[in-house]
Amino acid sequence: MKEAIQNIIQGLVLKKLDGDDALISSGLIDSVIIVELILEIE
Image (tube, rainbow, N blue to C red; front, side, top):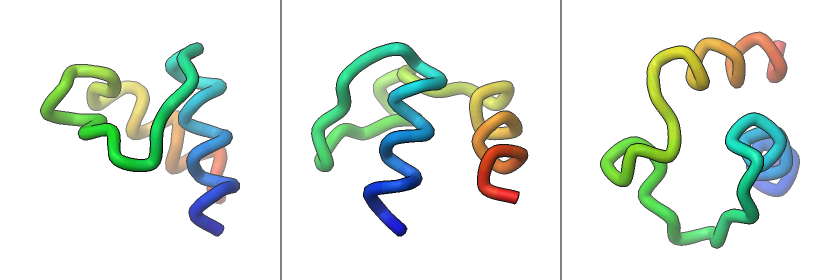
């Protein structure tokens, strides 16, 4: 499940991610990306 979510996030931010990346605090994802992520997971 973690790998699937990581793949979705990588597709949304168009960047290869490491498992330890701080997504929100680093600015890689914002509220719009979070909503898109939720829609993809559903």
